[in-house]
Length: 287
Length: 287
Image 1: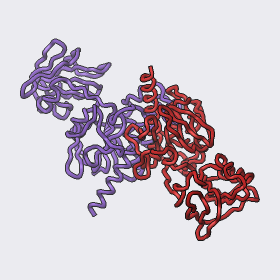
Image 2: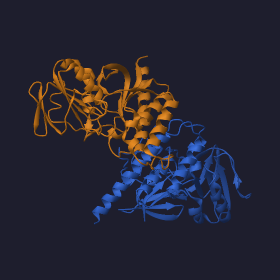
Image 3: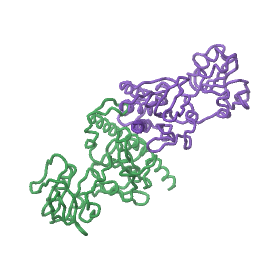
Image 4: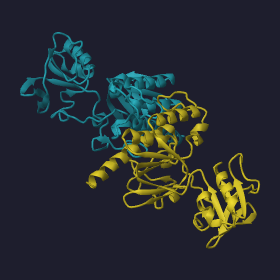
């Protein structure tokens, strides 16, 4: 069982990780490659004290090097859901399951954009992971709406088992998709269906499907942990970065503005140290 | 008039300063030399993301270099008091006066140790600055209780105008004190006097004096800004680092644990950006 599971490999997640490891805790950072973060695209960052006039990629590389030097363990993969198990948590990482005593959410700028119908039909034909839930749609028609290149893996897997796969990529350049997949363009307007998904409306066109896979950069945190308390569109935390779930902390852009590396790094450290002190309190209670 | 006056030149103060300057605000950092900070004495810091395995002095020097590269202005000197003037603040910096639209308090780990009698007799013979209030004690007997080497300046100045000066240093090595000054040892137990100071009790000994100068590393923040709301011994702030005074923010160790460079740096940045947004709100209001 992990002491601290960290969701997100950006500045907040990495700062939490080094602080957890320094305190001798068993830590894994789950998330996409840190080089996929927004920071990596920044031309110049000048307001992180001690690293003047550094490029975004330079900063990310320095951060990763620091984490690696301390032996931080990474696990690439999207976290689909976090379940509260009483006094610990279980994380579904693309259908691999991990247990952790505490969780630090560091998923970045909150994007609570839903397609109409998405929330209502989640689990009823709407899924956030093709490689996980694909087998439920064997021989059927599915659509993948992909924000990130990783969606292509889901598309190609589904293509093997479904009778027909549509793919609507919303990122720049499609790289490696099976020729049988039908790539479509447009804006997804609504997911239709009464008790289960029946179609997706793309602009003015309705396409009949049995399942829709939304491959997002990050799962909306309110889907990630059901019942997580929000404030506006950000995770509600107090000064100790505690959420409404005991043992679950949040740090960085997901707790709100300002969206700055230095704020994220500071919060990552605070969240980790608060997690450590929570772990010690739990240990003493169980003695 | 300054846009942002920053009190304290540690990691929080410097981080606030670079963020203020980057946003084109007129900023001065008031405080002791950054090399006098605790951080400078740290052998190794390993949990500030991006600067692995760095020494305390190395880190302080890198921070100062960053601030200097951005043109941050420093003013060495202790802030004695901050007065609210309605929509701006006046700072008393050892009897030089500065005006500022916003103030960021970054004075470090709160030390609310008072000598019995200190609070009650402040302004009635007790003072925090010899070079400021010394002239009130011309021809009289005074005592300086000094936490820091800078106290020697106060001592030597008082020696010129007082009939007798006692000096009780609580730091390591006295360097440059006039031979006429009587250096004493011991622990100050109480400042005595009804309406004005009459004596100081050092261990079991009572020494008659007319004035007592307490030269502290930092003035207790509750003395610095009268009416500042505290929580335990730290400054009460919300997630935006606002205090109960509009336009006054606090950042770093003075807002509470964890006492970590990375937390201080993050908070310094947040406080500066909140100050900037406060300044813009004020500007719009005055249009």
